[in-house]
Image 1: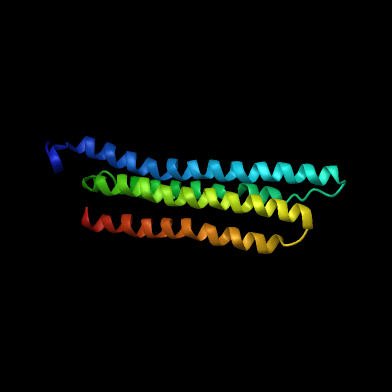
Image 2 (image 1 turned 120 degrees about the vertical axis):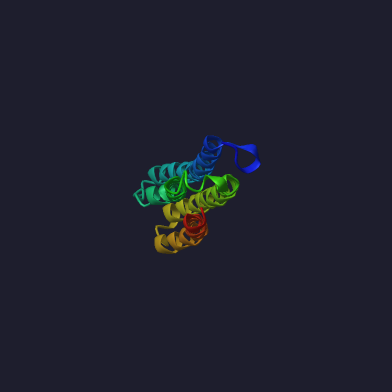
Length: 163
């Protein structure tokens, strides 16, 4: 059965599924880079505390783990996309583009959140102060990924009526 651009239904479904999977994988790449940056800084900050015989703040784990949520947002978008397939598989270009660019936006948010978290790790370990302030900054960066996820859900869910 031929359809859009000479692609059969199973090919369009496969391309749609690839787009869905890109949401989580590209976002996860950013999470890896962000948690790596923040985790490395947490380890270094703890070392400084131990060398100075200071209490090592456990809150650094929160900073190190903050970039993981973007992977969850990518997973949510993947599930929303898969939830409307195969009925909307003729929108496979949108799913591929959304997976790449939506995943990239969430991934970059995670990466930069990790970089900011690295600074927060150092600052909290050295001063013992400002945890809430540092967390607010990470929340601002997180908001970018939340917007991408929310708007992606609205866009993809709207295809149910069209598809």
